[in-house]
Length: 99
Image (cartoon, rainbow, N blue to C red; front, side, top):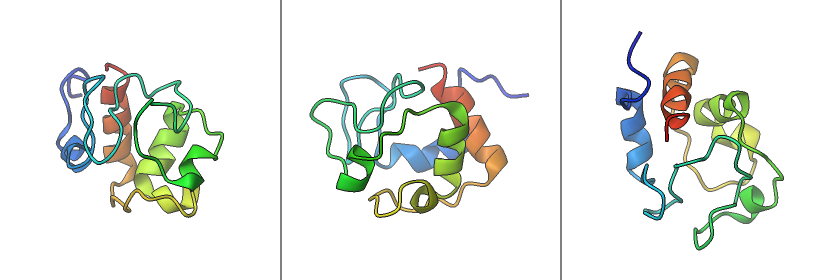
């Protein structure tokens, strides 16, 4: 099993738009502390109306489902479908838990 404190290769899909460090912004919000955070909860980040009003609190299972098929979890959201399979998504979520 890979060390969860090191980003898995699949995390490269995320870094195209997101930073891992709090206070850093890309096209999307930073991912530090995302597990347990309410969707749309990073001050100053740009969110789709669908995500901002979703009421989702990001837990591990919801994040995995979102990384596999964002539009199934948040219809009308702006995150492109990443194409991660479930194992890749779980590896990314394990890493996100360390941020």
